[in-house]
Structures are given as C-alpha cells and as structure tokens.
Length: 378
Image (cartoon, rainbow, N blue to C red; front, side):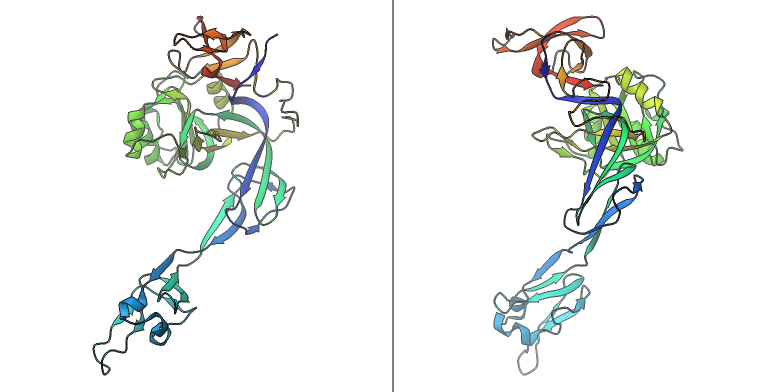
C-alpha cells in the first residue's frame, strides 16, 4: 500500500504531552522532579535587568568628560528618582551654574570619564514561568526551568492570537456549524475557555472580552473582524504576544467555516475540565500551532517511536487517513485519503506534482497535490 508523510494538525483524545517551561535567562527553579503542579503554579523565576537610560551629562554641563566625576552630586550605586539633581557645573565665580537632573528612576550604574555619559539602570523586573499544563515535573533543567508531563486530549488549531491562558471548558454553541455571535457569550464567563462552532464574529470577541473569558475557540474568523479587533493587519509572522485580554484559537481557517465535528465533540466531551490554551502561531519556518491541551492524568500515550498507543505512526499519510485541504478551491474541506498515486500528475498550471485522491465529507472525490493537504492526526 502506498504511504507518505506530511505535516498535520493533531486532534487526539489521548497523547503524552511534554511542556518545556524555561526562563529567558538563568534563574531559580522552584519545583522538584516528580512534583505535581497545576497550570497556574510558578515553576521558575529570575530577575531581568531594568532599562538603561544614558545621559550626556558632561555635554549638558559644558564640561570635559575627565571633569565629570568632580561635578557629580551622586555616585555609582546611588538610587535616584526622576528629577533628582545629580550634577552641577562650577559656573563663573560660583554664578550661572548649570544643573542636570535625573531623566529616569533607578540606580547610577556608571559614570564615564571617557565619554561623559552617566548610565541610570532601572529597577530589575521579576519574571516567573508558570507550569502552563497541570501534570508531573518530568525533568528539572538546572537554573533554566522544567519539563511538565501529562496525558492529555490535544487539539491543534490553524491560527491563533494572544498568549497562554487556562480555565474550564464551556461549550456555548450547540452545533459545530453554528456561528458564534455575541448572543452566545454568557455574562458569567470570567476565566472560562469558551467553545464555539463556526465563524466567531468581532461582536462575540468583544462580548467575551467584556465578560472576562480566558479564551475563545471556534471554527473560523473573518480577516476584517481580526483587523478590527487588533487595529492593524496581521502579517505572516509569529503571533502570541498580542495583548487583547484573551486568547483566540481558530481550528479550521478564515471565513464562514464550521468546526470539524470530531474536534467539536472532543471539546464538548471534556466540558468543565481545565484546559490550557496557547494562541502562539508561526506559519513560516519552525511552525508553531495554537493548541488546546486538556490534562487527563492517565499513563497511556506516545512511546519513543512516535506512535500513539493503539494508533498509527505520527505524520503517516495512507489510505483512510483524515485530512484537511489547505488550498483553494477546496480550502478548509475535510475528508479522507482514497488513493495515493505513485506517479506525478500534470496540474492545471502545467507543472508536475505528487497528488492524492481525497474523498470529501460531502461525498465528492477530488484530486489535489499532496502539498495541499494537512493531516489531521488522531
């Protein structure tokens, strides 16, 4: 039987999940290997240096850099506030003396007799890394962080914005093809991960923001609604740092697209459970997928061979494999692989490419390039 491999989205009821949680710079790990953690637990912390504010104090005083130390009223290590007097010129016969005041809050870090610069360093900023997913600390990375492991139900999306969040799942649409509008957003949604159906509207997102929801998941979104929400066009780049008050995850694509029925049912099956969600998306090299992670707490899952217990090899494309078409004219449609011809076929453009036949869920059979499909991994 013909087989191939292709990138794919994971929509699986059970898999072993490893969350690598590390600091941007060395710091202190707060937990031990084997320790149970919840999604909101801090697992590591450090201090980032504050902002540096350089001041051309010698120039402001009309002095030579070598004269600066004698004109300073503050020394290295002194704490200053914005507007504090830090230096004063000698003036003429003690008159017409020029004063220089601190341009920022912080501590005097350096006084240079070469450049005439005074550097004020702002207060250090504490940084904490949270576990993100409830589970067991599988590995401790000294001075960096940890790896948290658990058995989870996992849903990867097509696109997302917003950072990481977590909360109880709550289905607010009755069917996967029901649009998510403001009327479906409950007023008591604070801290919850809301599961919609088809396209989420800008009005529904604003309602979710007002209600204090942690995240919204639905099948599709219109690019104009997204632009209205953000205030700018989102290019092909890394997302996840947007500060909009919640996380958005699109499971299928842009436009009026219903959520895949099995994705919808999987999320509804775990309604009420705490889900961890991340909107981080990278479409270019080093692909990152937005995800919904629902801890199960069991021991079955992937082994070192990349297989799911009782399932198929991850990434394997063969007859019967569930796929989503990711290019026009069948963009967003779901189906299963019906055939994998070994010989390249001539496309409408006149070029040759490896193709496959897909039996769509609506009953049609279509032939598309293999690069135009994405595996939906069970």
